[in-house]
Image (tube, rainbow, N blue to C red; front, top):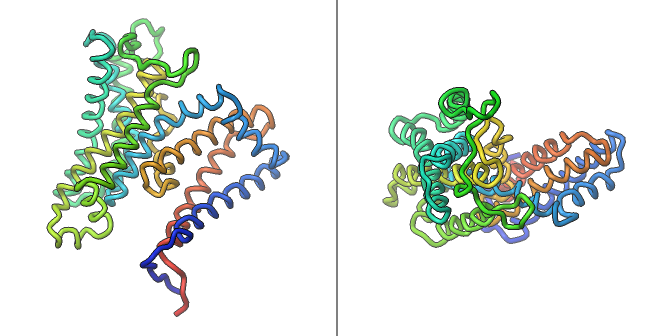
Amino acid sequence: MRLEAIEDQTWPRRLLPPLIALSVTVVIASGLAMLAGANPFSVLGLILQGAFGSQFAILETLNRATPLIFTGLAVAVAFRAKFWNIGAEAQLYAGALVTVVLGTGVLQWPSLALLPLLAVLAVLAGACLLLVPAVLKTRFGVDEVVTTLLFNFIFLLFISMLLEGPLKDPMGMGWPKSARLLPEARLPRMVDGLRLHWGFGLALISAGAVWIIQSRSTLGYEMRAVGLNKNAAAFAGIPVNRVLIKTALLSGGLAALAGFSEVAGVKGSLTLDLSPGFGYTGIIVAMLALLHPIGVVFAALFVAGIFVGADSMSRAAGVPTYLADIMLATALLLMVLAILLMRFRIVRG
């Protein structure tokens, strides 16, 4: 048995494997629900109802999807050029750190000036953080999987040191958290009384901008060329290392916007539990979306819906919320297999 590349991929060939992967994921989740002693149809219904069954549930799902859109876009951009950014978690915290440092009183500007500045500086922080692994890769051939992954732990320890030292809120009753943002540094709510904020709108704009870059710009063409075949791209005159650096800057900046939106839109201050793994979950989102920026939005809504719905389902049916983690892990593994079957067929000989 061997794999043979498929040159002309038809639409059914592109759509069927991902759909089958998601269907099998649902079947496996149903089986696990039965093992837990619950009715699988009831469990799946409770997940859907908890995620989309009311205005509150829908807005909460959109709110949970906001950072996942940013980190999913960051991963999709990098992976498209075969730059394996596993450090979106660190870049998220870099964006959050800049937002807190400048948004707690250093700059006392009106919201119309302060919020765009904080967003831009957060992007620069995330871009600069990922620039280090990018330079190490392009100049010295250091594997970016290792460097970006290690940066997650290094930067989280750095954040912990700051929250126990210079950034610790003196009014925080000893808890390791920063001071709260000024009201002018908070993103306004999209719906009064609920947590959904305009960071979600920024995420949608970012997805559209990334789609335009990838499909309509020279940089997008160069990124796809480098991702498909680095040697062929270099032979055609594309500056591979320069493209990888630009890709890293864009990817890191997008991940940092997740930190900015979470601090300015939801939390209001920086803590070590700001992200429950949004950077890592962004990898799942990007793979479920097949690295397509518009698909990232729908994949993020799917993942966020599972998490929000699982919380409601767990309370109603008594099934552990870990079922959501199993569903996402299964979906990721099956989606990787689906991508393989989209590009190759299995033949004998």
